[in-house]
Length: 234
Image 1 (tube, rainbow, N blue to C red):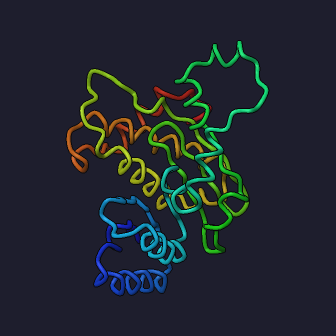
Image 2 (image 1 turned 90 degrees about the horizontal axis):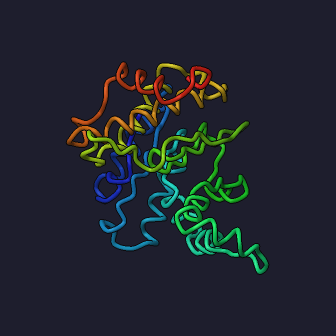
């Protein structure tokens, strides 16, 4: 598996090198994993960002993108309006009982339809992951789709100290399971079980200082997974 993120696209001199590496990986049967990881402040313009991201996106077989990054690439205004929409008629008592935090949570649980992600889909995509930290991971394959529920944004414990590497740990967990269990591409039940593994990796990474030093071992991640989820989900 050949993994890269958008940081390599920041320098013009690296574009040719990246495409050559992708081509070589494909010649040897490699799967291309694009971890978008979009640092907008480092880019010169939004239009340039979309153009270069799209060029790399079209080469990838597996893609991981956050909810915010996906909306940036498709149509920010559309999704902003969709999340903030309030019907003309509603039950006042219900709205008053929900509260701002619950309304925010309801927006975050939104699962994008295939029609909404269609502008970014191409025939070579095996799996598209849309992540929201450790809260939820949405996934799309050519034949099935769904979402795996994790924990509320961050599992705060006396050990929580650094959230820098949480997203990296989630991606590392996904890559570990995709490379060791290629049947995940076609087995929805098994895929969801291993996405829970990735979520637990993201949780543990928040307990250790340092993005790379905080990446957990496979045994520690599996142990937490068995504590967080009931056996049938592991």
